[in-house]
Length: 432
Image (cartoon, rainbow, N blue to C red):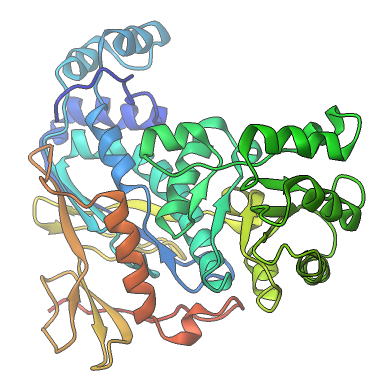
């Protein structure tokens, strides 16, 4: 991969990666061609499927994984590695191959989500970077996908920037959009990833003015009657009345950010209709997650704003992916320790479907593709060859569309928000 003017990502890793490289260079094992696989041993508690997200970001990060002079100087100053290793790193570049599930694919326990094949001295250095990107983005995407399912087709706006790290917020906005959110409030995500952005106003804007009416008038004067007015700073019923008085019956929307949202949505719809604002939409926000969205399915709501639960905390538990060595120069290797066993050999995975198109199981084999059956769909796609991204990789919009298509194939019980088994089982074929 070619160098980039953007900062190096080589230090977004753990010290022990370079410890292993230093030792492998000394023993001569660094050149051995190896295969590492990324998979989750289990899904997070309460999840029935995972969503692969972050692949596009990861490939960009690998392209910038270079040991330039500032990085080498830091390693030398800290005494992280010896001079022989520094000399090796000065010309280091990833020359291997990467295959994986397409971004926007769903995954299950044991799914070989990503496969990295390269000399050990290259593949081992990518472990932390791969896992930090895929674990974070896939966790957000899975949470967002559940919310999209629970929202019954109503638009969702990602609003979680202030609840997480500033860079994580940009990645989370991308992952949520991939999963079906309509827009984000994060402007950097809009710039960097081409996402639609939107925003209304905060309670501070209303409090800034002497009266709610004055605040609404200022916003309408600046943004037009199609704007969204936040009506719950003081009294919601009075706020709605004032909003319609100021903007007229063509007011775009009102936003309610607190209280019993289901009750308030019904009351707001009734009040808006009685005032003649029948086309004014109702937007709800405020500590929403997939369970709250599901509870609002019968409420007259037009859109939601979701923050904390999609970017952080219980809404987006880690995807739990690991990066494990499974093959060394054609020799299957596997970890045997209790509760953390792995299956040796490079895996190939297919998803099986009924004639109706409903997925039935994921079949994983370490001896090439499993015997073909009608309805099989191969899951891995080439991502990098010889260190260079494969031409024509899916764009974010394509990945978003792919996830929508895949979700339709899952059994209906696999989309349930309640705890239960994965939507489909994963079957690991024994070695032939």
